[in-house]
Image (cartoon, rainbow, N blue to C red):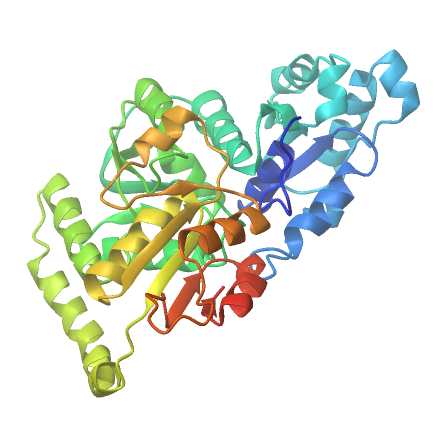
Length: 398
């Protein structure tokens, strides 16, 4: 019997592609797939990640071919050409990306051929192949950015010695992706660098266009964005650095020091300033933290990007006891191997499967006089872990 994913935490590759496109400035999606796919995916994505919502000409307003039985039988390339033409006429944008779904891929529509005719006329149109059988939303992130940076944008000629591109933080699949990107930009800017985050307020299409001239790509994931960065290096000659997300002051100090080394800069003053500010706030909680014994056993349920950084922070800086660390991404064996660290990870996706694993790993007290219980417990996960935390009497950070 094949496995199923209970309450999946991501959607298909097309959903990931549309989330990426919809969060890029002046980039317009054109959905080429069955009628209803765009609306269903817009609703499923918009209400995730602390309500991601939608923006200019994406979400439920995204242009779509909406193919039906006629196109499925006779082919949908004519319908696609019509939709591209109408979109170019009606919607202002600087890049239009045609993202395909399952049905148009299965019937073999020549999407790239249809797009190439518009490209030959000088129109800024790109096609990406994003059916669900290519992978989940994380794969959609890689596919779209690979298309933009490694197929559409011209090769870089000159490099900006202070420019950095940030990759690996996938839009829409944790509530903090914009905040993380903004803080990373703030820190690197304090070192004297220029930073392309692509997905934060204030970024423009010029940030996308300038990306090939960057001197370094930083990929904040051991799993997502690495292959993209490898192809980027081959095409544009930009080296890349795979780094863990710097959560907490110690990790941030190490990140700033390494970034400064790579650009031959001095990070000492920036690190001192940041530590003074952080610990200035933290010391005000010291009495409560120590006297009230705010120490916990912890279980983390996160995606692959957060698993190791969060576990390090709660153990090495908060002094909590980590009991279990679950990674919910659907990963290959090679991707799982890339996540090996001092933190033992368990690769589990289903909500009830995770709850059963916690129960099996840490049985609850059955009235014994003496019992080694993991109490008080803190579960750091998503809103899907709320019921699991309640059943254990645990505190919960979604």
